[in-house]
Amino acid sequence: MVNSYAIEHEHIKIHGRTSSERNPLTLFWTGSGIELNATGSELLLEVESDYGQYEQWISIWINGAEVSRLMLEKGRRWITLFRGMNAGKVKHVRVMKEVQAMSGDERSLLQLHALQGDGKLLPVPAKRYRLEFIGDSITSGEGAIGAREEEDWLPMFFSASHNYTKLTADLVDADYRVLSQSGWGVLTSWDNNPNHALPLYYEQVCGLLSGARNEALGANRPNDFASWQPDAVIINLGTNDNSAFYQPPWRDEHTGVQYKQRLLDNSSYHPEDIAAFEAAAVAFLHKLRSCNKYAQLLWAYGMLGIPMLPAIHRAVEAYKVESGDEKVSVFQLPIMTEATVGARSHPGQLAHVKAAEKLAGYLATLLFER
Image (cartoon, rainbow, N blue to C red; front, top):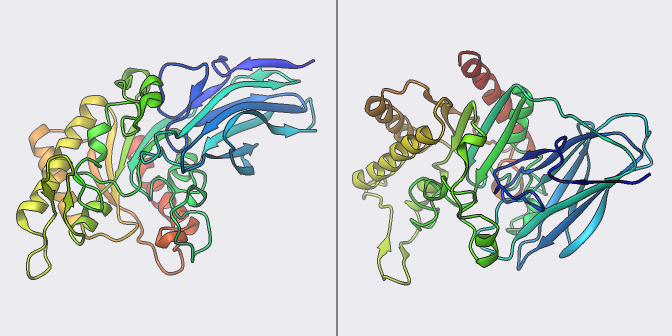
């Protein structure tokens, strides 16, 4: 007998920040998806995908192993998650969105409609903790998959499955969410665009997406923080803010105003501009605390070098003085080496493994003390 299940079924765990609508379920952010336990010999998932330029990729995990990674064609169709397996055994299934929210493609869409199989769904046990990761291309898993010599900016070279976010969460037994965008920062993007800063959109479901369809799907609505409170928020930002100091000015086409993070003649940061970065970091920590009352706030940084680390330390200390909040700290992640580099000169899988091991060890001490 074939059974059909809506994605809002009580035994289907939903991962990732999304709107309140569950029929269908829209997956906005990298690492979002569903998790379930199922009996039966076969299970299918109805997916819907669209894009203008950047296609959607998903991975399928069965019993903790990645068994498939595929690019989704445009349209709505059924895909097979497993077939021909022992009907009496329980299969743990996870489907993950592999690519980041594509802010440069307003047609970007990934939705899950329903499940169909010859077995039953069983409850998924709760994890011990909840983690939220906020970051840039590193946190989006850019370059975590693909040959080292690859330089094309393509969804194919993004991986939610093989970056430090999932690896860290697995090590500490946590559910997790990711908010990340390649090239973005705390104050500005890599090319000095002040509109491409994650703190501007943190309180929305996925406000960095544009277009009427994303608006209708709830991307710009206020996020329901009460429904999912993390035990720790990990911020991995600053790499692109540093890059902005070495790039030409960015010019706003509407106002004509130019924005530029400046260097002095001796190649050090201009005091006014590094102070602006620190002020933006302090303001973001205040915002994070207002939304996440009891979480540890951890600024984890360094996989592509540590030039902003002194400024991050100063910002964290300034925030602690202003707020009296002691549940905030800084952690230096292992710097990528020639042996751990991946595609697009970004951290490869080995770099993410090393980062996750170090980060999980530090998080374990923080979460134990909570």
